[in-house]
View 1 (cartoon, rainbow, N blue to C red):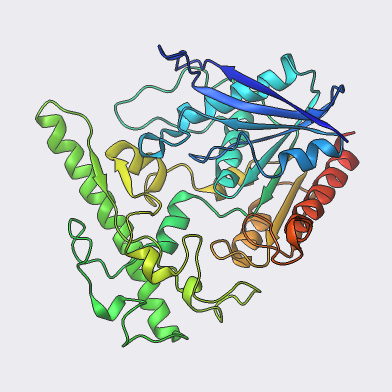
View 2 (cartoon, rainbow, N blue to C red; view 1 turned 135 degrees about the vertical axis):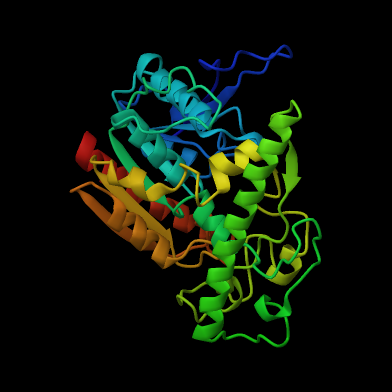
Length: 378
């Protein structure tokens, strides 16, 4: 089935069109050519551009609409604020219903978008998201149109959880990217894989302490800046490719390759400047990454979702693991919920067989999503 794409650019209740012309909310609507689907998916991420999402054409070829949607924070995660992102997502949901002729909207929470779209549905059903101290709620955040179903694919439990699970707890000095406590380093020769239970327990505890330590510094720094007449600043978080499961594939065994992460070899990636939470404002740390303060943690939001829910995990994923999918399924408040595993990596690709082989997992995922969705909403 042929697919046509329509560019969508919209203002937000809290952000106008930029002087250069760009809209804060942008995306591509994929639909079967010449048709007006009554069911459509919308997919959004904290910062990744989802306008040309890899599933969009697969879903549209099977008869549903797909809006790959971006908030104002695409490529600008260092300034992320949850309540403002939610009103931007709401603009996409409204557009589907009011302009595209869609009657039923499915919230697709892919990768980091899993917790974001859970927070959206949670806020739309039972408003609960609060602004950071000293800030007013984003205009429109109490009037969000809810989705009719929720799908989680290759998703983790929230930005604070994934950062903490990946961050290197051997960092001694946050201002020094090479400061290291060898006793807590995955990559020190004295700590060879496979890792002992004792080492893993110490490691996970130290990861949590590091997250809390940064939060304490952020709050102290905010007070210091306010006293000086300022409100925020940028700072860096180093070495965030150090989840033991990336190195030691005997932990939560799957078909994933050992000693690998989304950025390649974990030791090399961990020492690079490319990592999640690498640059933050103080406010964004509290809104997005802090275990203590962030409302992007998925579990309480998932509990408020009562609509039909589908959870799909990939068995070669090097950053999302079976325990993530299990926890999401358990946390969902839906009575109608189910879980599936598909062979493929985080982006639902399979090696070998050329393009057809690489696309096989995506086709399988699209078949599953469309069949599951139409059985409940058509």
